Amino acid sequence: MNVDKARIAIKHPKKDILYSVNSEGEMEYYPYGCGIAGKTFETGEPQNVTNAYSHPLYNGKIDIETSMPLLCVPIKYPGTEKTMGVIEVINSRGIQGLSALHKAKVSAFDLETIEFVAKQLSQAIYNCYDWERQMCEIKQKKYIFD
Image 1 (cartoon, rainbow, N blue to C red):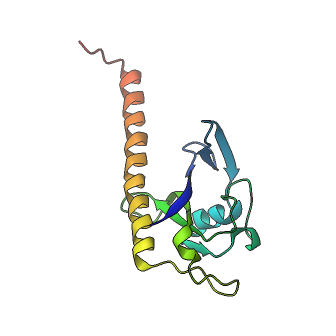
Image 2 (cartoon, rainbow, N blue to C red):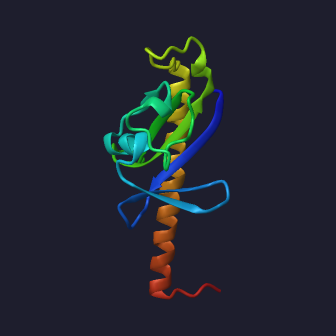
Image 3 (cartoon, one colour):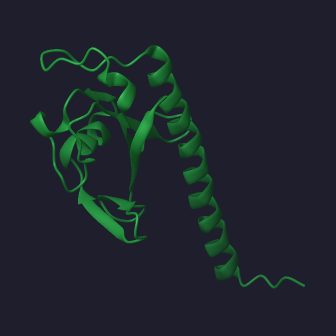
């Protein structure tokens, strides 16, 4: 899949917001329902957008700025339908045969690839949360390691 740019936004574990880290390493926070990514988070359904700028849900704070095809896929907790975040990619392959009246062409392989990445990412995020929870429990019990 030809991806020019991608953004991952994850639900904050303690607050009702999504967050992302920008290219400078700074945290950015977004309310639920903000932009195309927020809609994907709320519905749990992938969004295939021909031109992000012209889409009625587009919000420059969270959505990648592009007039190219944008694909936004939910990241769901492993084994559930509960959404933990979204991954948004510029799908440069979707430009082929692009028309303002039609959706960008996303092949089954492209969608399957980004959904596979989202599943792998969900397991990694879940493992990080679980590790942090376990470390907090260990600190509370004051285990001492030799």
